[in-house]
Amino acid sequence: MHLDREHCVRAVRSKDARFDGWFFTAVLTTRIYCRPSCPVVPPKAGNMTFYPSAAACQQAGFRACKRCRPDTSPGSPEWNQRADLVARAMRLIADGVVDREGVPGLATRLGYSIRQVERQLLAELGAGPLALARAQRAQTARLLIETTPLPMAEIAFAAGFSSIRTFNDTVREVFALSPSELRARVPGSRAASTPGTLSLRLPFRAPLNPDNLFGHLAATAVPGVEEWRDGAYRRTLRLPYGHGIAALTPRPDHIACRLTLSDLRDLTVAISRCRRMLDLDADPVAVDGRLRTDPLLAPLVDRAPGRRVPRTVDEAEFAVRAVLGQQVSTAAARTHAARLVTAHGKPLDDPGGGLTHLFPSPEALADVDPETLAMPRTRRTTLTTLVRQLADGTLHLGVESDWVEARARLLALPGFGPWTADVIAMRALGDPDAFLPTDLGIRRAAGESGLPATPAALTARAEAWRPWRAYAVQYLWATDSHPINFLPV
Image (tube, rainbow, N blue to C red):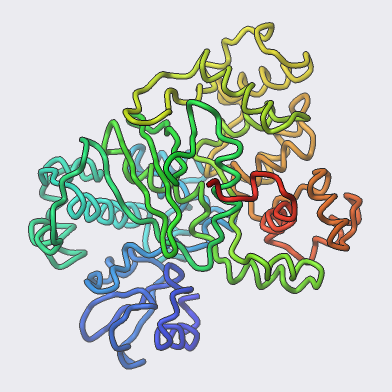
């Protein structure tokens, strides 16, 4: 995108917010970089140059604009629609892997050498993994400076910096302000209501239809782990340094996010996982544009554009829940999951709320006696095999997973058919092209819409919807009156 100069200039001159996060505009005369929708008067075309990432801008010596705050723009949708090395690396960097494990840990997770990873990131993003992680740390630091009364020393380490000096130098370099000056620019009190609690706004590309997104999460919520309360979807989070609780409320132009964390070092990861669960980095214009090319699907898109794919904050958790939901109702699946949570989940406190546990980890479930599971014997075998392989590392499901390889590994497990593997690929692994042609709800909706109702014929018809078939699933599901399709009252 950033190499198409004419297209970028037109986007900047029209202040088109759809391209925020796709590329960044650096102004040669002022040495400032902006998002395409920056509200200031656009510079002359000859004074503009374009970069694929904020990190690349910072490496080239540009500082962030104080008006449009390009560091807070939505992430590029490229990283969630692709499964190549660069996209998988970007998902891991957003999940804080470089801060926790360094570049060697990133390369090990990807299965490539450090040199290969650095070379490909530099070629496509203009910055290596350390620079990309540094840009993310700067964004986290700014958020903590502006929204909390924490001392700067605590903010430095919570944001992932190794020293206060590095923190001070980075903030000055990126924002052209010292940490104290950055805090002084924010009017009003920054005091949090409780220690470790932060309130922030999660941006997205419009349009966003919250009905099926929050409706699905609320209708399938596991008691004790998730709930809908006071207009917000709330759930517990298992994080690298501790645990947390996220409360997410849909607003017209953003998602209001309230995070309560036991360790503030988890802030970046918690934000990344909430954004991923709500599919906030998607490009709805591109998705809906492709799906509208099918004359039978177009009316469903036009009726309520901007649907997202409801995903998860924990891939292993979702895989377990997918098995529990095989061939049973939504209510029965919630009951099975609630029993596991009560018996094997880690308790936590939620003052004023109804959340009681973290969902049990694969390691905790690996020791479960199969005879205590109230389900058919074949499904017990499926569940115990899955959690055992997740616990010992034979099977790994994460943001860096190769979608094709992970699907093949799942299908090799006993009791796993195409529906279970594809729903995990769609909602846990984030494959935007995962498709469920055998799903009864999809087949019924297809028949009512005039689309082919048999799996083979529907799959053939859906070839034209690639690479967005997972979004077509959401539009087809939305024709039903099931609670998953409606924002809770």
